[in-house]
Amino acid sequence: MAEGLAAVPSTELLEWPKKDKRRFLHAVYRVGDLDRTIKFYTECFGMKLLRKRDIPEEKYSNAFLGFGPEVSHFVVELTYNYGVTSYDIGTGFGHFAIATPDVYKMVEDIRAKGGNITREPGPVKGGSTVIAFVKDPDGYVFELIQRASTPEPLCQVMLRVGDLYRSVKFYEKALGMKLVKKVDRPEYKYSIAMMGYAEELETIVLELTYNYGVTEYTKGNAYAQVAISTDDVYKSGEVVEHVIQELGGKVTRKPGPVPGINTKITSFLDPDGWKTVLVDNEDFLKELN
Image (cartoon, rainbow, N blue to C red; front, side):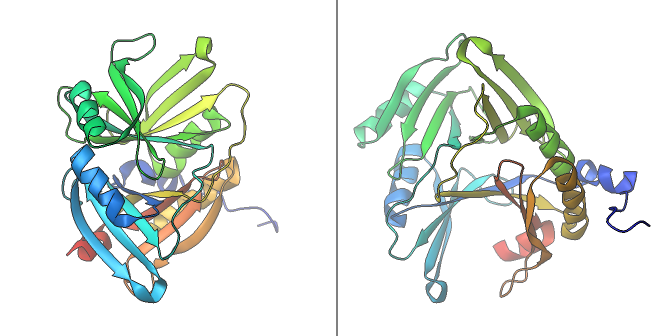
């Protein structure tokens, strides 16, 4: 083979992400006061505190919260770094979303507990779905979406991207996601693509937003990544490397076990610099137990 030419991946390898057993595990982000955020999420959003761990030798603590057990639900992983009380969220991160049967009631409950309502409840522009927006104590935005019922109340992570077509192709090829829905709103100068492993109302989706003419955003240091499960970290990592060669991005951690806990992971950045961590399914379940 000529020097410098990458090996051509097999069709079987490139098809692997679509055949793999994948789901969104958690979103990881940093907060300035762990107990304050836990109180807000449990009292205002109705989340449950699923587990908490303190790693004093590394000077940080984690808390996992969600609407159901981690074996079946998407959750948030909050990280508190000792002594750091605030972070820059940046311009690229958009929001998380929570589905609820009654947005008006949820907003009143949040307001009564001193929450910051940044958009009052009402129909979305040009549509009938009732939504509202609130900010948590660290400034993270949560969209509240009215839905009669949902198996996954924590239902969206919205990130802004500089090239929607490129991002859709990246998440399809590197992560085996489906384009669940695409919406173009030229009157408001934006387009969105919902990416996921099932239909929008059934599961969590990654909402990629492209604002016309904006190709770059600041990442800040607050939001970290999403974690997704895989049956084979090594095979998945190989696919990611090939897709990065084609569409851009960067591998930030080669596949292998994490020292200390031995959970096998690999991590990488998409073409816009958003990070994803792939986590071995079996190792993840062992870690929970």
